[in-house]
Length: 266
Ligand code: 5RP
Image (cartoon, rainbow, N blue to C red):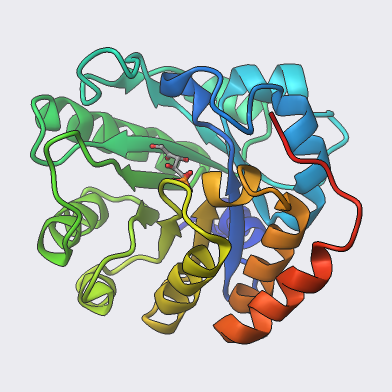
């Protein structure tokens, strides 16, 4: 890795703890106006100060984020599909030159292993890695799961390993049973997605288990911005990722945080 690439990555995965709490707010790129993100500017401005990185598209970045922001940006650069069509048919949606102009700290794209357009998305990843290597830009591969695919260690382990083999600098995947096997067989750092909204306790358990089993952090969206207490929730997630809190300690923090004034997002 070049100095610039390592330096960009260190903005996201904090050297002090070796961990990261990324806030994923890129859902609109195929889901449209998702609950909790209908007005991205509100969600992002309230939560950004608690995030180690923001994952989003260039459209939302330009329209909804101040150019004075100090939080590093992980720019989603794949898309081209909607929830109404075949999700795996993604292409690259943002040139590396623009990612550099936007001062991104990493670029992210989805791969769809086992899906109709698997090959296309894997070649997208390889191309993006080539471009990233040229200019010192880390690439995050998102192991997206198509409609018909399971979320077990065998499948996600396959997807994460392929992403790493093709040169991804870090990988985002889902937590599942035997998650440590995925971590053990993937030679680059893994962050976990939160997935669909569950109770705060379940989401904190997911974060705790993932960190205990070797993830370097979370890239969580809906379980934070769809919570009735989003600020309390992201602080509780941080306490697990960075401060070594267990689930009960993080839940206590969440309960205390609920007393602070905060907005539920539409
Ligand atoms: C979609 C993504 C999302 O960022 C990802 O799903 C993370 O958000 P959530 O915690 O809501 O699952 O990469 O492909």
